[in-house]
Image (cartoon, rainbow, N blue to C red; front, top):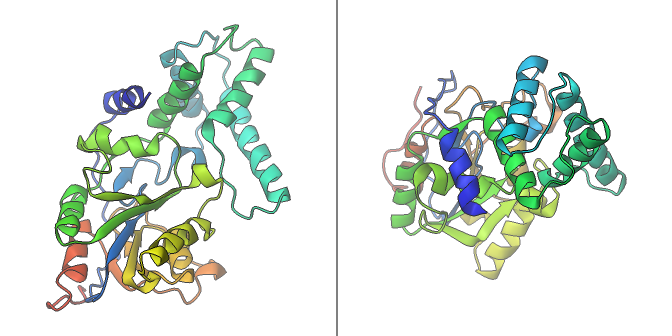
Length: 309
């Protein structure tokens, strides 16, 4: 299954370049950092729509339906085209699942996207839009990936591999805390030709929203990492979280005690949350507009890292 996911990502990915922002870098030494944790979409990878596609559905009905039915075709699911039903059913299914989880006390719920697609396919079969009598689990998973790569094209952020390698060689443990789906970890072998372990990531420091059914800006994922680090006698203050969203990444990570870095390297994904009371007074420890600035602050903490105006 992993190979199928990687193949679909490779076949549908094209080089992207980040869009410059007006946010200046603010680089200062961060002594004592033993762990660096990253967000994925908009930080380690360029996200064409600025975030994972299931949480950033586009506004163009025609484009949306085109992607929807092309994904069904790619997954070899027999259907007829019916403009308009794709967006309606997918958003309704996600909203319904979110509402059910909120009613049970989950403030920031996350879906497992194959469950959403199963609901949608059942409804499409009832409407005779999907004409296939049965759909295999492999087709269901492929559909989810085929749709995602069309809605949210991704490409490695410039400097991502070099930065991870520099931190790894410097003895820093690496982890991920991300709003993600089952296909997200396969972005790395698909686009960087290296799996997470080969890139230096610690398997005990990987937290994805779809597994816990909890999303950022909730702090659950960060707390899971903090608990693992505590077992290693590493405090959150010895850990740096890097992300592109002042609320989801900086405020949420800081609330658990992590040091924070705002990644301001791509205008598509930079989220300053201006006017949002939840980020009032939130200031990241550093601001980077190129991932390759991170090792300077973390590894060369005695060097002349300084504000860049």
